[in-house]
Length: 520
Image (tube, one colour):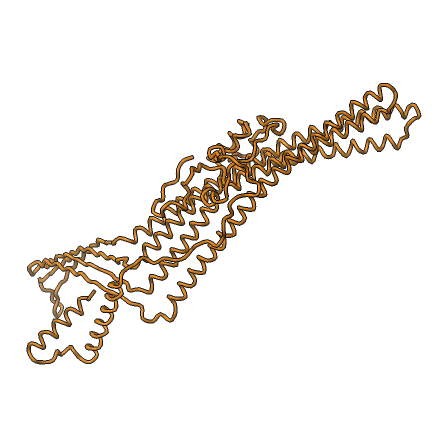
């Protein structure tokens, strides 16, 4: 677009040619500037006439998604159960704590605030697409007296100036730089929205793990107390044999040492339990000093849910919020690369300036005036010493780094899912074998009791068989807890724990469809 000076200059040249003379302003320098101006404008118009096609950047991931998991369980995926997997344990107090954490947990609240910040930043980028206007005004006044040779004349004069104006400008986004920056801001908002859900899945999983750790430690303490009681029965029996001269003081001291060792372990379990209780309180958004675990069960649940059925690897790309968030970060980086590429093309700007004013003078008629200008300009990068190319390469490198992180996150997620399925399966097999061993230990105790009754075995055989049962109980308790932990990790690895509905992941949403945070 030609500016006002170019138009005036061409009018003067045209009038000069009509008169058959030379334009007094059209010196060699002026003619050179005129030719350069026409060259720039022509180049810009040729760029624009070539078509303002949107710029695109390749951000395709390199990871090949497998067809299935090694621990795949046939069936249909129950999305609702996976969204609220903690309800499968049928523990109302656990459900209450998780629902409270979703509202009150400080990490989740922080993520929501970050999302709101990203939304406002996207609004700033959207505002840059349109024109801007500024209304301004000015007023001034003065007074003057005339004095000559010490004599003051009565010629007082006063002046006043009032002005108001409107200034507007707009830069058309022919090559998509502003749109690309807006897309990047919207993708960052989507990434922040998915980050809220990612924090939510992590918090719910960690709270559940700490919750079941408390139950495990309570059950472990009960088993340890059974062991202490068993040793005390043996100590009583050994004391009787010592009185009868059939046992030594060494035997009594050995049993006492075992009892002391077990009682010392109780303090360790109490400390670990108190620490886990405080962790649950903080995760639920409560001060640990006012939180009471009295409503928790006394031990681990006996009916542990089965792993989710029907899970396929392709669902991870839409189900896991951390993957969704990282994908939107990749999209944002790609949009910034496209914005940097737009610097290679011309820039256009339209400006308008309008002013109205009034000049009032005491000794002269008032003057009213108005003036308006509209200008158009174009700028084409001719020489930037490589700055534009360097910026493009820097943005592209940032995008590739984000894409590599995205690929790595997918691989890590695939590993976590198979670890979960395999771990739950193998720990379940171990529990079954331990339960079988415990049943055999119970039979051994019954046999030892009969042998002792008929004088065919010593009392310590009964104690030994009882200790075997206690040992199996301890191993079963620990294995069941580890199995629950693996199951929780599997739920988290599959993207469970947030309000997902099939096909609604942000990866399949348009960047323009950025909504306000929903209240949970």
